[in-house]
Length: 121
Image (tube, rainbow, N blue to C red; front, side):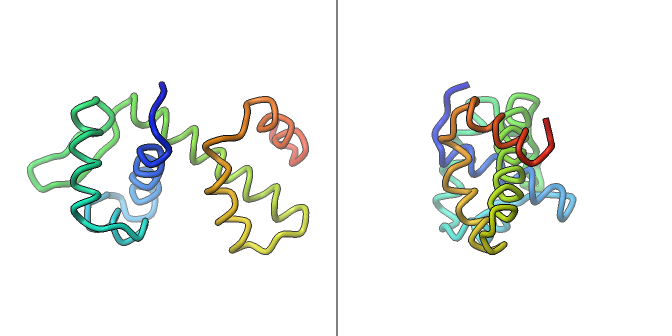
């Protein structure tokens, strides 16, 4: 499963919006990620064509099993990294922002060491 960071961000946001609102739409994704609606439309087309999402006739977006697996992996990393950064004294907002930056690139070894440190492994 080798997809780009931006695609991972879109999948993660679809998951997060689904948990928060019960649904995800392109306009919600654009607002949440601070990107343009045309950028989201282009990304959704690519994600749909590659089997990561489904869009219904009302333009509600859902994750396929393949998309959910990636989104959950990134979101779990985000939450664990945020918790770790807060634990070591980083403010909550900065911890969330920094977690977004490193959640895609951190090695599995480092990630699992962080999980052990925060007691989640």
